[in-house]
Structures are given as C-alpha cells and as structure tokens.
Image 1 (cartoon, rainbow, N blue to C red):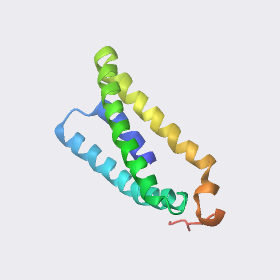
Image 2: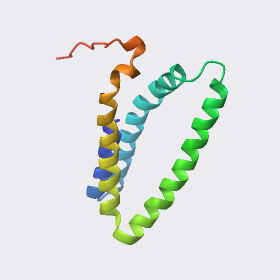
Image 3: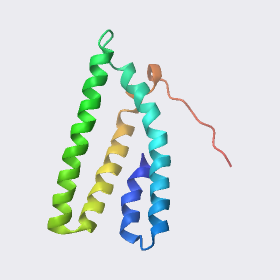
Length: 120
C-alpha cells in the first residue's frame, strides 16, 4: 500500500507522458499486492452465513466512496490546484498504511506473526 501512496507525489514531478505510464505501472503493482489480501482479510472477519450481504455492502461502499472521492478531488483541484490535492491524497494514503501496523495482529491469521526472511 505504501507503493500506491507515493504515486500521487510522482504526479507532481511528471513532465513527460512516460512518467505517467511508469507511475501507473507502480500503482498497478501496488494495488496487485493490496487487493488479494484484502479479500482474505475481509471474508475472514465477515459474519458467518452473511458473507454475500457483507460483500454487497463492501462493493457498494467502494463504489459510493469512489464517486464521492472523485467529486471532492475535482472540487479541491478547482479551488486550490493539483499540488495540494496530490499531497493530500499521498498523506492520507500513507496514514492509512501506517494505521494498518497498529492492527496487524488482528489482521494476521490466528494472531500469529509471520516472519519473512530477509533477502540480501
């Protein structure tokens, strides 16, 4: 998720079309690492027997949130420009990333910490 939080900062410095392609590739890579685990975390914490209803609420919530975020982002860009918008999005995403560390034990399976060996 941290990878996706630095992409809006890259938009500030992008001057050529290939910069945008590279930034979008980084965003896609970051989201490819976020979305599959999210499904596992979500369904593990959904109420048994009501999984379909939980998924429908989640899907509707994402759709509505995307619409509200688009409108809000457009208003911010029009009123203040794109620099504050990109900075704000990046700060909010980084904050969300770091907040996940506070609840990591609840997110991991059975509360176990899974150690990943360092690659040198």
